[in-house]
Amino acid sequence: MNVGILGGTFDPVHLGHLSIASSAMDQAALEKVLFIPAGQPRLKRSEPSASVDHRQEMVRLATLDIPNYQVCDIEAHRPGPTYSVDTLVELSDKLGPSADLFFILGLDVLGQLDRWKEPERVLELCQLLVLNRPGEQDFDWTGFYGRIPEAKDRVQVVIAPLVDVSATDLRNRASAGEPLEGQVPDAVAEYIRQQGLYLTAGEGRTAN
Ligand code: ATP
Image 1 (spheres, protein in one colour):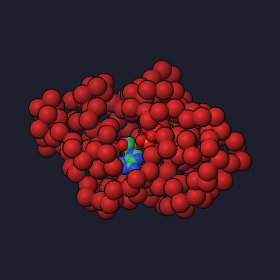
Image 2 (image 1 turned 90 degrees about the horizontal axis):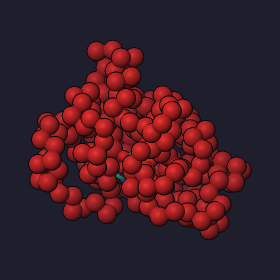
Image 3 (image 1 turned 90 degrees about the vertical axis):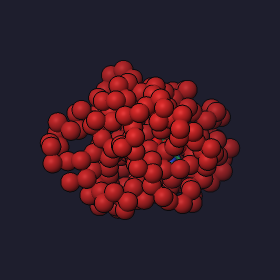
């Protein structure tokens, strides 16, 4: 069984996330994709704006009607910063040896793999399905494989349309009172409005 893992801050979840999950699913014949909101993302430049409970609820709303997408709460309330390697160890114990894990991520995040905790172990535990992202066209693959040679056979690039949506931009739009429809699922836009999320001025693009 091929299982996709899409970790993120989801502050808020948006159509870019749903799109990369769908493209990864097709390319790697994934049976399901687990959306895993991070409690305290370690490599983001600033704290998440919305609480983990709000972020998780938005992911639940966004994935409600898609049978093969599931919200997974194993990172949400883990004390301290969130490390993907801990999540992967926990998931591979839980799912057993018949599950092949595929971590889905954007090129912006791949470029920081050498700053993750135990990147070599991460690459033993899962393969990476990488999606291009606007602004990342000049990714230095030679430099990347030079820094992490173990990644050579463990990274697949997913060919998919670029989706120009980011959570940073959405937080800024929400704080300016602009509508979010068309960039997040309608139920998520409605939730953000009802709960009064992101009303204060947004921060700059986070580093992940
Ligand atoms: P922020 O703008 O706050 O940094 P984000 O939009 O990058 O947030 P995250 O929740 O941090 O959203 O992203 C989770 C994962 O989804 C990361 O691997 C990121 O690279 C990927 N991702 C998010 N948006 C896109 C997109 N539009 N295209 C490709 N990958 C994306």
